[in-house]
Every structure is written in structure tokens, then in C-alpha cells.
Length: 397
Image (cartoon, rainbow, N blue to C red):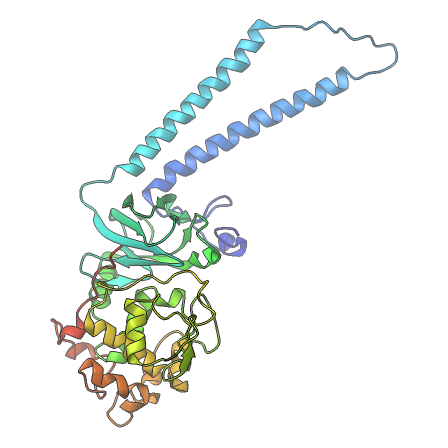
């Protein structure tokens, strides 16, 4: 699979035939060295092939021609074709080392972002505690990524930045870059990490804002919705749940679908029957291997979220899963977002229909089902109104 589809490449004024847009300070030097190596390779390829064709014609076997089997030497020619390529290779090595050292030596003033790689998703935590599944960064600022893996070897790669680094289990690896172009760029896992490795290709996985846009996004991203159900959906998107669990009924990614699971009786891998209730949800989040659903015992093991989620966040996720028994709610989530129209149709914005989206779980969270999903901008408090509106803690690895 190409990093960028050819029609997209040809349509992008910042891209070239060989490369996606040059969107970081590294790109100019990387592209220049690449083109130098390419032209050197083309020159010697043409030279060698031309000589080979010429000699094949000149020294071909033909009637009356008697060849000389004695080896012939030309010391000057042999020294030339040994020394000159060796000097070129040494120069390429020096240029490569200089570029590598630049990429491995971050400046002092950086924005530090924690990156967690898992099968098969990315999670980004920002200095103010906000978490997202896209990397949002400001333009013309040095960014330092502190990267961890929860399971296997991954590799963080943004072709437009010409930046790539392995993410190794049990270690913290770092990389830095400075974007110079605003826009959305693709994010790849460049290391085979399992059967759904290709799902870690995130189209528009990196978003570069201007400084004002980044500050506004960062402030908003740190505020989870007040309504418990919407808070649970917010966590589902940001904590990696969606990389393994579908919200579409009957659709299997890695783990079972959440749609219409609540209140059902399930068969476990041990042959026992268990009810998908609030206690089962809690146990599955904190001890995911305790009661594995039948047919999923051979799937990649779900990590425990013990210590990663507080009680309010567990209650919010529970409220979200309870709400997933409602057809209208399932459709809204499957469409990718809870728009205002969806909220109103599900009764999440007024008291009259609040029970349509998980009133059963609202009592668990200690919140009224009448609370709106989001408050109007002029009513949002500057400080969290309750514990449930606090930013989620950084995932521990």
C-alpha cells in the first residue's frame, strides 16, 4: 500500500512525484539527500549498462574473430572505479549520520506528548491531561514524543514529516520533529504488529493547527462531556476500545461487539453462563481474562485497565454500554458521532426522554439522566463541575 494514493499526490500542491508534502523541518534535508543518491545511482546504472551493451556487441563471438583469454589490467582505471565510489559512499554515510543526529537531538523548548501504541490503535496524552486518538500539534513548534507500547513492537511513522521511530515494549523511546505546514497527515505503524496491523494506518491521524487553533482544541479536549453516556462514548473513542470492539451489531473486530450486549446471557469460554450486567462490565474492564466470552479466547488478550480508569470513568463506560441496547443510540454511534440531532432524538438533551439513553446507568454515576450531553459554550465552567468531568489519567504501561 502506498503512503499516499496517486490521485491525492497529484492533487496536492505541496507533494512531489516521489514524496508526500514536506511538512517538517527534516523534510528538506531528507529529500535532498534522497535525490542526490537517486541521481548518483541513475548515473552509474546508465554507465554500467551502456558499457555492458557496448562490450557485448564489440566482443561478441563471430566468424574469424579470435579472442584473447589472458587477463588484462588497467591500474589507473581500476583505482579510479574503486576510489571514487568509495569516497561517494563515505560522503553519503557522513551526511546520513549528521541527519540522524539532528533527528535524535531534540531542542530544549519542546511540547512533550505521551504516545501509547497498542494492537491496533494509537493514544496521545497532552500536557494538560487531554487524551485523543489523533495527534494534534501546533505549527512551527518542536514536538517531543515519549512513546510506549502496551503489547508488541510498533513503529510510529509520519511520511510527511520524514520521521519514524520504533515503539518497543518495556521501553520509552523518543522522537521529535517540528511541523512547518498546517493540515492533516497520515500516520502509519511501520512495523508488522499482528493480523490487524493495517488498521493502524490512520488517515488524517496527525492534525497540525495554528497556535490559536491548537490552544482552543487542547482546552476543549481536556473537558469530557458532563452527561455520563456521552462521557462513556468519549472514553470509548480515546482509550482504545474502538480498535477492538465494534458498536455495530454482529460485527467482530477482535473482541465482541458492544451493540445490544447489555442484559444478555452469554456463554463463557469455561462453559458457564454469565449475564452481561453492570458487574460483568466492570469485571471485564478491570479483569478482562476472568470471564472471556466463548469464541474469543484465542483473540489477542485485552489489557487490564486497573489503575487506568477511576470510578467515575468506569461508571461512564458502563452507562455507555447500557445505552448501546437502544437501536437509535446504536445508529448514532455507528454514524461516528452524537450530533445535536441525535442527542435530541435520543432524549439526551432534555428530561423528557433521558431514560432512552441509559437511565439505568445514570443512577450508578451519581448523575441525573436529565443532564445535557454538553453545556452551551457560555455555560461551561472553567473548572470541572464534578469528579466525572475530570480529565482521564494517563494510561499506564
